[in-house]
Image (cartoon, rainbow, N blue to C red; front, side):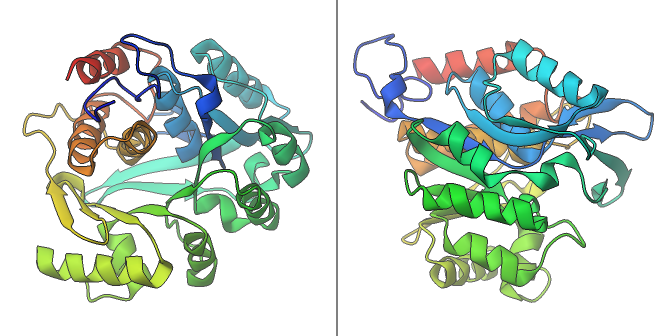
Length: 323
């Protein structure tokens, strides 16, 4: 099938065929939490949940491995996931720690995040995670770096990687003080693909701030890919778009010019979801980059990182199906 075929290329050849469950499902692991905004409103979030939310709407049937508290917010997470059609079999319940919360603030540099310690997602159980994933034939494993801030989180990610049933896509999210170069390097060493923003690349590669030109960014990304033996490094640059280093060539893309901006929370997760769709569907990198930027820009027109309105997803899914 051509890479410009149906959305999430079903790995089937008949026109309009349903996606073959035997082809494997994306597995996502890590935090689920509520983003709490300055006006007191809250939106369900956490990068793995956000990405799984979009993948479910795209028809990829993701499995999310996470942990919530035995509290009202945890029950709200379960209701939202079930209402959206997400598989709940990977969700663990913690009887002591609360469901995660993050206070989101805004300034001229963009959103800031205040992440409380010892949340339910910090206590992931590796054995329960393996029980949920075993026999699911993962198409790939997605996780961020924040889930590795706790010992149980690191143990769970290590256990899932050691299943050795799917390649790993790591979405770097450096949140001070919850990371260290050594821990992130360990995660990168087990991954095939990595996504991070321009500042995160500079910090991890110890590059001069900021890269002055595309050529500087390209050299930094290529060295970073070589160091960690990555097939792809995706570098997001906010309003400047995103760049991709494939090991052989350098691709650049820009977001649409006309964007109705509400907030940028979750834009990177929307980008990641489309990138996973492209990896599983076999889309060419240029097409994946353009689609990911367009969808991420569309999510900037809603408050928070997820939306209960499927019309955005349906619009893009239909467009991708007919390109």
